[in-house]
Amino acid sequence: MRSWALIAAAAALCLGTFTHADAQTAGTSSRFFDPATKAWIEFGPSAKSRANPVPRQLIDYSGPYQPNTLIVNTAERRLYHVLPDGKAMKYGIGVGRDGFQWAGTHRISRKAEWPGWTPPPAMRKRQPDLPAYMEGGPGNPLGARALYIGSTIYRIHGSNEPWSIGQAVSSGCIRMVNDDVVHLYDSVNVGTKVVVVR
Image (cartoon, rainbow, N blue to C red; front, side, top):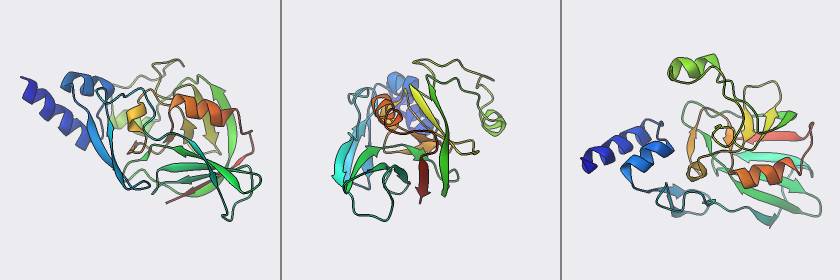
């Protein structure tokens, strides 16, 4: 019976629908190759899944963007908040899976604490079991905070699945662990420039 649970969990992961419940059922953790650190990282419920697999860090920055710019590097699966004096805060993120990645320049148009979630119609068509609306709170997939990106359907938001950080698993939104999204939320304002690069 346990081997069937493992097979089901592996199939769900391959299809991009692996959830915390799937991992609990399987009782396993998984590994992913982090292209930024060039190292294998364990994730999943049996791999300290509540911990951030990619802790934030203050780094030196000498790139082309001005302070108070957010740079989302999809390939690296990192978000950089450019700070004054040649510094940046670097965060681990989860990004859109194949077919859901995008690039562009926008601005933060809205900020929300414990946001409610209305899955877009296209997502509900792909996943008919999704609710029409979900109240904000710890079980909500948008997590503790959300930064809405321009007039797009995308957000930089928290996640109740911290083991997904460093992965390409979303439908285009940028996800962070809740501690990191709260940290970022408190550091930026509506109007902050967001540059998404692939």
